[in-house]
Image (cartoon, rainbow, N blue to C red; front, side, top):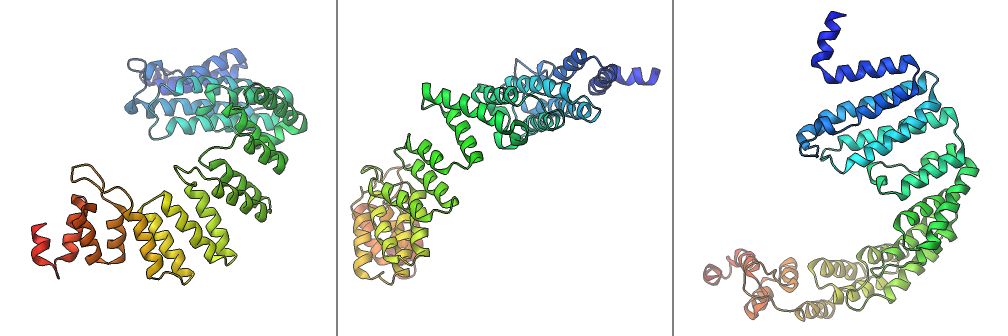
Length: 374
């Protein structure tokens, strides 16, 4: 006993563990709750009100004891208590999470451990599904949701039909008041996926289409997962036709449509889209995509290439100043290995310093004197 006392006087972590086990053995739920929440208290580790990276690991090791304690409660027949304490612990850690440097993810692992311990306790104790739904919804709609990755789908067996219906009603009510509530929309999206209500999920996304086309991509992906590829491609094509004239279509949406065209053997449609994209995004990547598509369709001839290079040539010429990127025209000509044309374009003012160096390096065999001057 004297030896144990000596150790716990010098080892705070050991003292916390012994106190926690003593509280669990005593059967006093309030004392146990206080001990578990004490493990999540950041004050002993905080400097100037913030847990720095150097102290985060030590705090994480202490906080992880709370996860072990909750699981011990469940294993020893006290799952009902574990549910309530787990919820308090999750909220306590979530409130403190913004004041911790969790660069290595240690505290995030503890938060997810608490969420897993809560689920385990629920599966054993079978708490009221509607009350559980209310707690999950409140947590998801609050600012505390960012600390843990609690998904409704993981809690489907706990919620059952009654709990899911309750969560659906809550999420729908919030969206009626504020259709742009991001958290409520995410919650409803989870519920509709669980219900496999594809059309309702599409309607949810379609009610708030992003100008970039990202929402249309989500819709297309949902339809494809549901085994409705024709409708998926139709959504993608619709967005490509309605692209913002100033910014062009979403790059991932273009890739989505082109991949489906390639599968269907519609190679000329891929060339058409890649050609249109090049007019919006005058970049080396857009040029390379067009070149690859045209070669696959056996139409990468001098006419197609000249038209593509002219589109890049129409872009603003770079200034010879530091920090200003060079032109995509030079990048494309270098990528084609057309060093003479690249040299001519660079002489016309299309190259910046870095491109001149790259061009001079590649031209030193047949333009040694000019390359050296550059």
